[in-house]
Image (tube, rainbow, N blue to C red; front, side):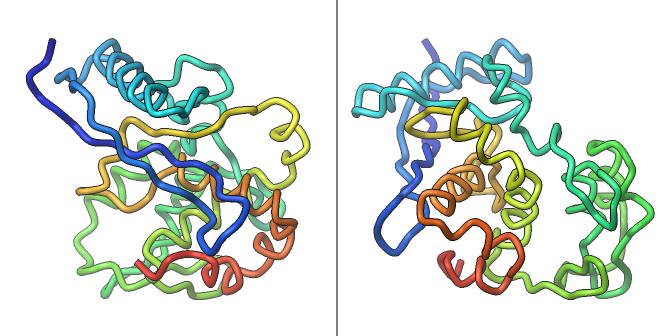
Length: 218
């Protein structure tokens, strides 16, 4: 057994109360390495820890998920409609970034997600100052608002299928480390479920400011 102990979150839709999502962190033995088998061990260990604490049914949302629906809901698999075109969600997010000296990079909207991430990573244009999409500027705060908003927009038209087929208590993304990253597709999906349950999804999809107002100011 690994001697390394990691802590990772499970995101639960919150139907009532101020917050859209309840975040619960669990410690578990971490299997080091980049092999897919190691990542799947970590997913199983995290889900087992959550189950011991009463969260019976957890879905991993990432390309590493054992469940086909979890892989399908990965941001790397989703597409979003922009001006009548279906484009990779991750590429639209990356291409919408505005830096001090350049951006947005509309030309990468049709890139494969990993290619789009690499393109942005290699830019030398100063610090990130915001986002721009379809001629409108979006702020950096709340830090996860723009990414999450794109994610729920991509899935909003499929909410009936989601509510019929995706029946889980909580959601994880094993690649998400809250100490190093801001965006998390599992949290965004839990927000989607909460918005739908509260009958606020339609308004949130068309009104970024409204959606952002529902998130913690992080």
